[in-house]
Image 1 (cartoon, helix red, strand yellow):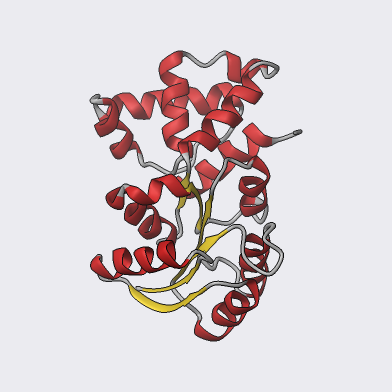
Image 2 (spheres, one colour):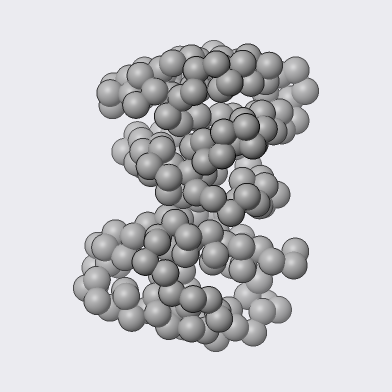
Length: 217
C-alpha cells in the first residue's frame, strides 16, 4: 500500500516513515510543505495520504486544504489528517463531500502504533477514522439542545460514539463485551431515534450520523 506522508517536523516525519514501513506500507513520498504535498498527490496517486493539518509556508490549515483539493481532483482519494488539537471545522470539511476514505486523528494517537496503523488501513479501504475526542465534542455540543439525541440511552450514546469512529458492529461488540446481536439492536434504536435510515454500508451510516450531529452548527 503506497502512502504519501506530509509532516513538517523532521523527527515526527522520520518516525512515521519508520512506523509505516514496519507495517509493510510503501512510502511513495515524505514531504514537509504544502506545495510539495500537492505535487506528490497529483503525480504519485497514492493509496492513502497521511497529512498534518498545519504545513509551511502558511502554518495554518494548508495540509488540510491541499488534501481537500486533491480529493476534488481525485474523488474518494483516502486522506487521514493529523492535528495537534481538536478542531471540529476540520472534521466537517473532511466529511463535506459525503464520501468515505477520510480520517481525523489527534497526533497523540500516533504513539499507539496499532491504533494508528488500523486508522490508516481503515481510511485506505474507504472507511472513516474519527478521533474519539472529536466525536465526544460533537455529541456533547448537540446533546444539550437536540431532543432526539437526548433520548438516547447511555449505552446507545456509547455505541454511537464508537460507530462514529468508524467501527463495525462486530468491533463495537468486542469493545463493549456484548453480543453482535445486542449491538445491532442498539444500532437500530439509534437510527430510529435520530430519524436516519438503517444502512448495511458502515461508511454511509457513519457519515450520516456525523452529518446529523454536526447539522446546523
